[in-house]
Length: 327
Image (cartoon, rainbow, N blue to C red; front, top):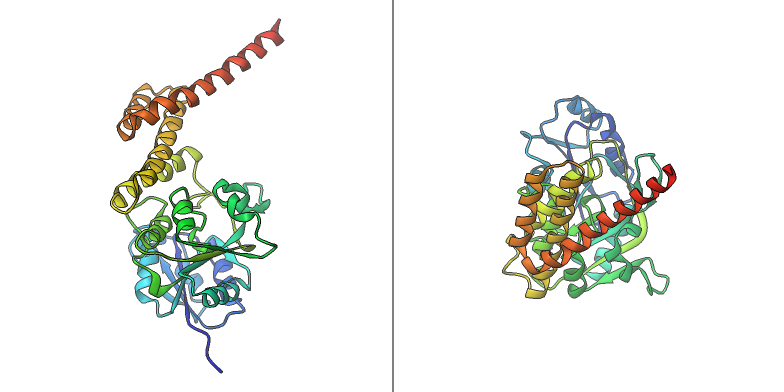
């Protein structure tokens, strides 16, 4: 009887002692049994180490605080498995997550697979996460009732140069396919950059499951979901996309470059609108508009009137209604 291949699971954590056990126990409860579990403590100041002692099967590593990308890479250096997965310490997998993902990986010789998930809101109500990704919609229809959807290299380039539909907790990747680890130089997009390193380097093939195989919790400390929306806009959709444009400038077509530039300009203009109308910060508004012009002046002249004009129109209509009600 052939032994199942080893899967190395990396859990990066920082000051999550209160909820860490839920993530760990979801790994230990997997129906897939051949697992190496590494917990990388990114310099926690709470009782994380005390929690870990309850689980003797865990390989525990403590490092100086360096961010989630650095923690995952620390785990990757110690990983022995043919397949790599990384579960965030505020998430949990369904018991069959690894079994279904590894079965699909081996069945189609895919470079990586990922799955849909239950996304919690601030009220603790869960919803289908893929419904929030407009770029996923073309791949969710006309699949003949199958759970898994295959993505060729063209699909992957188009999808991942628009967004990253596979946060680290949803992903299982073939170790031999990895070109790099998680990028520790970005703010939030460490998993996005890691996958672009693979997708843009060679033709590759992936698949995703429409079935929701894990849960994303919200506790106010999440790297992405726990942050203020404006902060996420600045860190992920402006700073990290700027980094992506620079990093992959030699690996993308002119059309792909303009797609990223347009996305970046839209985000810069949205943030500029927010700064001037909500924060009354004319200086940052001006800096953001200048930055958008530098990225692509043509897109800026097209997008600016659309976004700012639409906002002003809504405000004028709202003011008119208020005046009418006070008469």
